[in-house]
Amino acid sequence: MKTLLTLCLLPLTNLVAADAAADPLAPWRSDVHIHAVSPEKPRHTIHSYFNTCPESPDGKFVLFYASTTKDGHHGEVVIRERNTGEEKVLATNINAEDAHRVACQQWVSNGKRVVFHGEREEQWFVACVDVETMQERLLARGQLAGWGQPNANIVPLYSPHWRPGEHRDLDLINVVTGEKQTVVTVAALKAAYPDWFAKTFADQRPSIFFPILSPDLQRVFFKMALATGEDPRSKSASARQGLICYSLAEGKFLYMNSKWGHPSWQPDSRHITEMHFTTYDSNNGSMTQNPGMATKASKAKAASEGTSSEAPVRDVSGDHPSVSPDGRLVVTDTIMTSFGGERNEWGVVLTDVKGTGQILLHHFDNSHGAKSWRVSHPHPVFSADGRRIYFNVSEGEFTRLFVAEIK
Image (tube, rainbow, N blue to C red; front, top):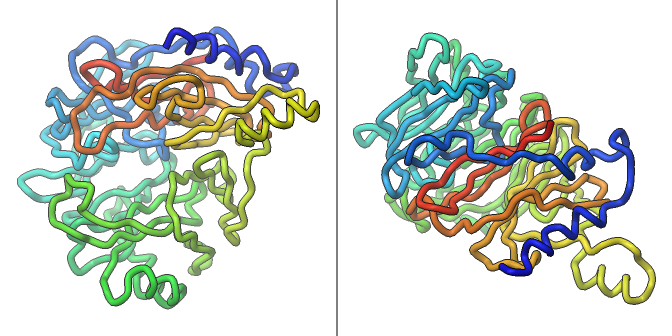
């Protein structure tokens, strides 16, 4: 830890010189204000995932799940006004699957509504709350919410991965009208990729799991789950495999990757960012990698041979990457071993998509916080205007939502 601060400064002092117009990292090199979003109360305040932003599309509110239980498994959905700090509780008495994605709370309808899922009276459900009227509407029973888009009224639904029942397909629901439509079936997937399906699942019955809609709502990717038990709060609840991309507009499968990492859509609704700054083209699954993400060893070798004058770009692991709204930056969380830290230390790392520089925005001991069976990860994500990055920190007694802001 004594040498960590010095190591953290290295990416800042060795970035390629460029003016702010040409260098998207420039605003993040200095005067970045980092603080807890809601520090006043002794409780967990958790942002759900890196595929959705907790800030409302107009920048007025921040959405989070709050809990006072040690494991974070029981709580409520809250919004906080950024300028005044005033908070409103949108929904209460929610049992969450874990402290990792909590209630999967997310903005929809251009910020007019919030969708979340959870368990009440041993029944899993998806609901929607009108922010203005505070009226809660039940959308589905026996299903969970995937990730929609904040400017849309459509949210994907899937069945619980630990006990899917008979309906194992992917639905879309309109949060305004309540209209629900099945858009992808397991049978169609089996027909599209018979060899992979047979090798992975044989004669067993998997279900579609964790669907994520593209920004333009024309595509969706998801993975498959094979139930192995009936306890949702267990690592053995299901076995998850594959990353499948489907065109909703064309009604056809686009590509399949046998491995699921931590994918997120890029703003163009075509490319998918994955772990280690890898990009997949959802048209055909072709892969490219950020040119700056070479290993430390190869960078050091090149430098020793006089073939490179760049500072080593550090590898990241455990990362959940997401792209800025303008498509020029990637933010991810990372275990800090490659920065000289311990495995229980995590950081929030920012890089440009061309790989010319890397900034470590913040680092912390992430081994505390909510005592859930699945721990909370930072899950960093940009605000809609690209000037703030939200992430979770489990450094003390509570897991708390933080924000890094530039002027």
